[in-house]
Amino acid sequence: MSSIQESLSGVRQRISRACASAGRAPDSVRLLAVSKTVDTARILEAHAAGQRAFGENYLQEALSKQAQLGAQDLEWHFIGPIQSNKTRDIAARFDWVHGVDRLHIAERLSAARAGHARPLNICVQVNISEEPSKSGCRPDDAATLCAAIGRLPHLRLRGLMAIPAPADDALSAREPYRRLRALFDAIRAQGQPLDTISAGMTDDLEAAIAEGSTLIRIGTAIFGSRSTSKILT
Ligand SMILES: *Cc1c(COP(=O)(O)O)cnc(C)c1O
Image 1 (cartoon, rainbow, N blue to C red):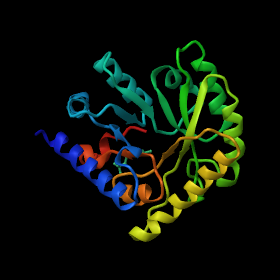
Image 2 (spheres, protein in one colour):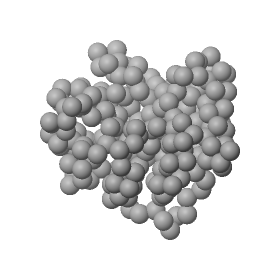
Image 3 (cartoon, rainbow, N blue to C red):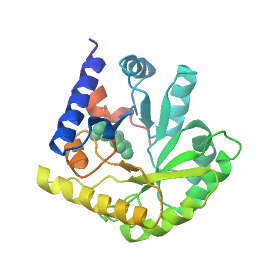
């Protein structure tokens, strides 16, 4: 087995165990492989091991890797912060966008997606720990934002995404994810057909799954630690 194949099966085991202890079906959680700073050879190794969904944070890096990879059966998720001058390329080149936290950005993505066969899948990012100067809408604003995005023609609103503040222990790691789940349930109760909670990374996927995450975004546990010097901003 290649090392990426081994790490992937390790992550899949963590998912199964977390699902089992939460009394959830193992296929109720999707794995998004976060491939920022990871070269295409390693993406192809993950692909050979059965991984199909990949998440990228930086547009230029993602476009160049997509061009190298060509037409593969890959599903691309944009998970980084979104600048309004990048919405055209993001809408054209990705299947999902997880970091939408303003209506203005959603409107631009929808307009740029017109003419594509399928709508763009959207998760609204919520600043669930209410940290100053962090991405994400305020929890109190999430329902209104979701309602407005739900009316845009070329988007399909799928759910909520969050990156909580780091926690001190496994138990407190669950609290923000519990609040995210409550918000998700409240917005669904208002009639939005949400089916996705994008929550949980390498260090806290168990906490996120225990609280109902349906899609975890994993980089380090699959591809190893990223050298910070390679991270483009
Ligand atoms: C980098 C990143 C991840 C993956 O983090 P790991 O700790 O390496 O698993 C997940 N989500 C987002 C938004 C990221 O930027």
